[in-house]
Image (cartoon, rainbow, N blue to C red; front, side, top):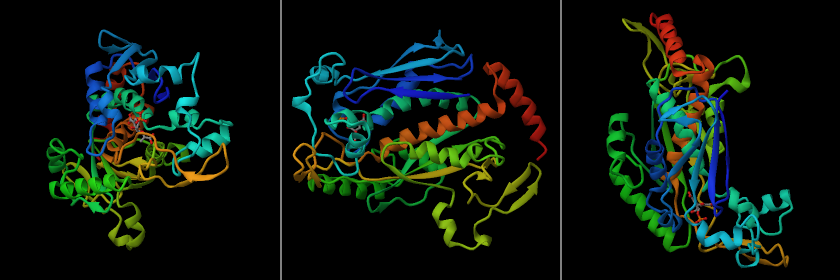
Length: 382
Ligand code: EPS
């Protein structure tokens, strides 16, 4: 079973992740993971923290000489900002007062977390609720990404909407080419200019912006996930993994919500047969039917709400005095949708790897290679 945990506070010494169940013999390097960490830090609209950090992973266990051992992989990303926070965040002697947060930000975990865990200082919640945690997730899920890439799958994320600006549809080839040079991971340069303008306007007003990103997984084998039990359905698992990313409020697969507005004749992907076996005339299902990958590209979109920290804060209540006040202002981003798209790629890659290992699992890459070969022969005629 492939699983991971992350740990670490936003202004603590480091973020740590432990990955278990990755087979032996997978090639992995810190540089490969760092590329994804760097992508997560980018994006027009990011805040001051990204100028401080230069996220890099340290591999502390489970990898020897560039190859996984089959034992748990420990990954660590140090917080450069820790030097500025040690007096207030130290596990031993922490001075709470100078950094105390008493007025919860609507939309952040501040209030609910404080009620649930009995904290008086909201910092005890926000430090872990922070999207800084996604640096650990990108690091750990990138090992899983390497696994699915080894077996031929490829994953692409791109931004399709920011605020009210929607990008025009593009082919996957165009998307891959355009996002290389985009500050917003957006394949439509005209829309990108408008998106930047909308981010600038939000910044000026002390506001924040959300948006939508899309993840596409190509070269997916038929048969990942299963219809036989609710928690084995691949679409459900992908949706869960994306919804677990900070600020994600909606997920749709294939046509998604649009499918609800159309008759069945315009939704379902008709089946044809040709020299290479079965094929479809469309991909409205987004590559998954009955919770099982059908061999088409997996296409999934996630909606991110605007970041909860507003520089022109919303109304709230001071939990110490009980008096209504404006919410606390923590340093933050104006818009982090491109970063969320990179996190989305990572968590979807993890879920694909998990489903892949359930089907073809073995303790080593060589063992899985052999199983894949048999399966490919078995389904080659369909
Ligand atoms: C983030 C680091 C955080 C925030 C952001 C994401 O750093 P700091 O709190 O020191 O500015 O920039 O987190 C949030 C937007 C949030 O609401 O928690 C990161 O590394 O991605």
